[in-house]
Length: 269
Image (tube, rainbow, N blue to C red; front, side):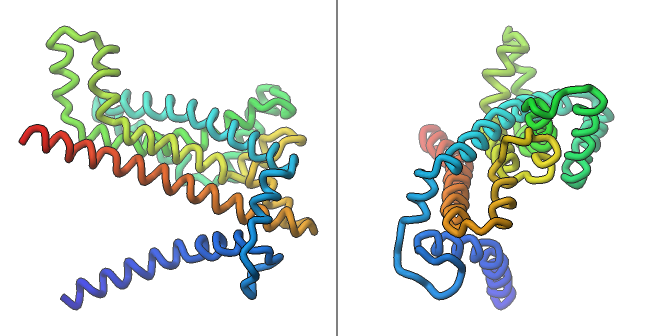
């Protein structure tokens, strides 16, 4: 019994360490305080500034478009790569898994700098275009989509796909009607992770973005060096909104399959 309470206490402390800074930031986003310190009166000024300042709305819109666009490409590549490796020979699967882990553990600054050299210097693509930036975020996110999809493939009954083929389904039909529904939650988790990685990335964006474009991360770093206090505190509101959206998305993705399984179990009974 004592060990059980110790485990819960450690878990509570870990979660507190992870989420308390975010909660503090969220609380101060609803004040007009210029700095984290003595609590000021309740105010929505940071949110008003966030959604009424053209510079901020333009930056947010561009970042979201980049995040969603690159995440869609990364999700397609990561999902097809995971499915292909899963149904390949064991040796090929191991090689693919090993190669996929390299970008995950590699430092972002190395990825960003090497992509800049390859795309801009070697291939001659102008940095004034968005091609290097999009490619960089796809390279950054696709391996994480792969990692999100593979566990769902391993949980799936491998005989379902073969049974569909034996019953006359084409490989493409079996893919979309049998495999994709089984791993849909993993695909959605990978997509949300790819969007989050794109919004969070700084180093890859710094080396590959056009000079006139700012992502949320590069804008935040530049804003913290300036003296516009109102812009800085508006970014507290932006951080709170991003956290809440990601939290809601993850809850929906993880709770929906559980409810569906409970419903199907109730029908069978």
